[in-house]
Image (cartoon, rainbow, N blue to C red; front, side, top):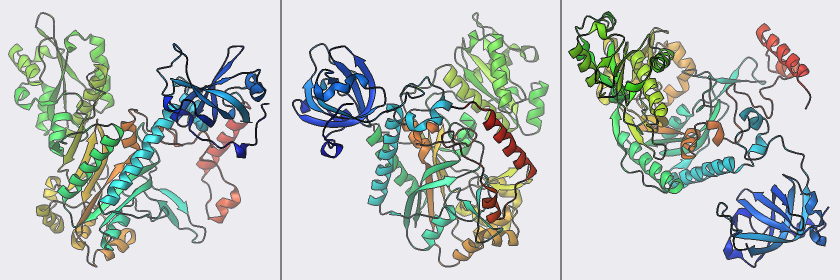
Length: 614
C-alpha cells in the first residue's frame, strides 16, 4: 500500500471538480473516490471523484510515493498530493470542466478499500430497484448529486426570499392530531396514553392558521408532511412542502408574492426570466383542456360539440345530452394517416380514463372523411363536427360523450397522450399558469354528501358566504372559493387559498360537509375556540417542494430528487422498511395484530428465508 504522511497532515485544499487552468503550478491535496483507472504501463491514470466533479490524476507506479498505483480499484477512497499541470496538446477533454488540467501525483494514500460495487456508479441503465437497494452508491452519481444540489439551492433561495419579505420560519409539530379529511393519516400509538394515537401531519394547515391568530403575521417553513395514499411517479408517502401563511392580505397579495418567488427561483436555477404568468378560471381550464392543471407546452384544445351534434338523432349523443352530459372533441394533427389499430389503442386510453367509448373521424388523402359513425350523420354535418374540433385536411378528430367529469378526464388523458406520442411537447421550455375561481364544494356520489374541493378551511367568495351560513343547498354547486393553484408543465406545483376567519362561516362549512356538532367539537374544537379570539383575515399557499425540484431537474420521477425515497409500494429497499417489530414493543403500546397482518408477516418471513444469500 502507498505510504505517505499521516492523514491529519494532508488536509484537502480543493475539491476535485473545482480545479481549472488558473490553478496551474499550484500544489494541491485532493480527497475522493476512484471513478475509473487506466493502466498505461509506465503511467497509471485515475479519475478522482468528489461531489464537485472529476479530475484526472497521473501516477508513476515506479515512484516510491505512488507505488500502490497498480493496486487501485474503483471506489477506493484516496488522498492525493500533487501539482496541477496543463494537459499536453491534443489531450484536452472538452467534456470535463477540469479537462484542461491534470494532477501530477507526488504522493498517494489509500484511506479505504472498496469491494466491487454491484453496479458502475452513474450507469443509468441499471435496474432502478438495484439502485434503490444500494441508494448510498447511486447517490455518488453526478446525476443525483446535481439534483440534490438544485434542491439545496432552491431551499436556500426560498429562505432568503421569504426572510427578506418579513416572514418568520416556525417549526410545527410532527406528532399531532388525527383529523381525517382526504388521504389517510399515518398513525403513531401513544405509550403513555394507552389507546390513543398521534397522527403524522398531512399538512400543518390548522397550525399555521393558529400562528396567524397568535399575531405572527407572516410564517413559513420547509415542512415535512405525510399521507398514507397510493403512490405515483410524482408522489411519495412523506414529502416536503414550502409552506407559508400571511395575515391582512387578499388573493392578489399572495399570488403576487409567490410570482416573485417563482421568478427568483427560475432566475437562479435556470438563468431565465419567466415573464408574465397568465390566469385562467377553473371552468375555462376544464372546458379548454379537460383538467385544472393543463400542460400549456403544446396547443391542442378541447372543443364543445353540443351545438353541432344536437338533434342529430345519433342515440349515444342524444342520450348523453338529455341527461345534461357533454359531447366534446379534440383534433389529432396528421391523424388522417392513423390505422384502425392506432385508433383502437386510443380508444383503450380513453376507456382506462373512464370513458365508455371513443368516436374518431379522420381525413383521408383524397379529402373525404372516414369514421365508424359516418352512416349516422349527413356528410355536411360530419364535416361540421370535424371542423369544429379544430381538425383540418390530413388530421383526425376524437370525440367523447359522457358526464362532464368523465368526458373531461378522458379527453385530458387523450390530450396528454397525444402531446407526448406525437412529440408536440416542447421539453425545452416551462409554461406556467395560475388557475383561480375553483368551486368551493363538489358533491361526492359515493359518499352522498358535499365535500370540500380544496379543504374545509378555504374561504368562499365574499358574496357566497351567506349562502353557506343559511344552508341554501340548492346553490352549493355554484359557490366559488378564494382558491388558487400554480401550474407548471401540467403539474400543480403550489396551491392555496384565503382562509375562513369568521367562526360562524367555519361552523357552517363543517355543517355543510355533514359533520355533526359533536364531530366538529371532537376534531376541531380547539380551532373553533381560537377563531373566537380576534382572528385576522389570512391566507396562504403550499408548494410541492419535491415536485418543484423534479421539474427544475427535468426528470419525471420524484424519486430522482429525494435523497432516500420510497418505492411505489411505500417501502425502502435499502433499509428494508417498513419492518416488523418485537411483540413486547407492540404490547407496550397496546396493539395486537389482526389475522391478516399476522398472515402477511408469515409470508414475508418465508420469502426472506427462501431468498438467496448475498
